[in-house]
Image (cartoon, rainbow, N blue to C red; front, side, top):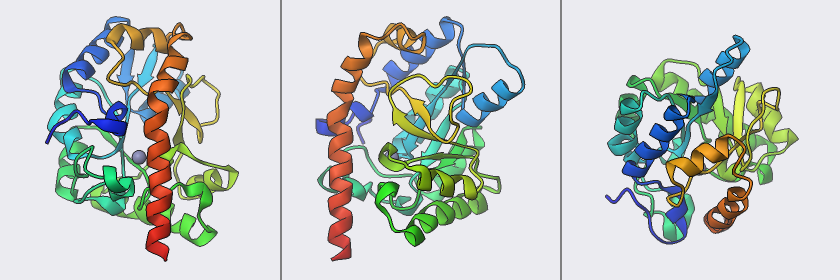
Length: 253
Ligand SMILES: [Zn+2]
């Protein structure tokens, strides 16, 4: 399975060699690389080190095959958000693009990842935009996926990532109600200390960003890069949400 997706999903994957270069550049610039809950715990403990939290979505097999080794080499922590209802199968919310990013890990592969110290976060069951779901289904999407992860991994699940990034006050309240202390959206800007922990914004590195580009972005010096990054990343996000909404409607009818 190729680790470098093609077509509209291309910007969702960073080749392992480039990931290694990006992490080395961040470490070399003095950033401590952690998972998201760890970064927030460090801030709460008064840590003043410059921090970068690394997050990965969906849980493709590719993460176990490639990213785990790169992270270990870089001595970096990370948070991986699992699409629990799709484990062991394709990312079928992507419709015709389901195969572009490879299959989602099964439970035994996820246990292997968790054993390396990567934080496992919740990314809902079916990966549907949560802001448009009826209340009962919204609850189930957040609660059942959390329960299955916590049972399988025998640890509390502290972090959530909104599928496609979309959230609302109602969605954030449900995520908090089921015990998640932090949650991330897309945002494409830096998270500042004191910001809403249930709407942690993220930058999305793409295959077009060198290590130096990423350092500039996390320093807040990449204002000229952010519009470019948005332009590059947008088509993939738009296609993914549009397809997910359509696939879901088809299932209902
Ligand atoms: Zn996702």
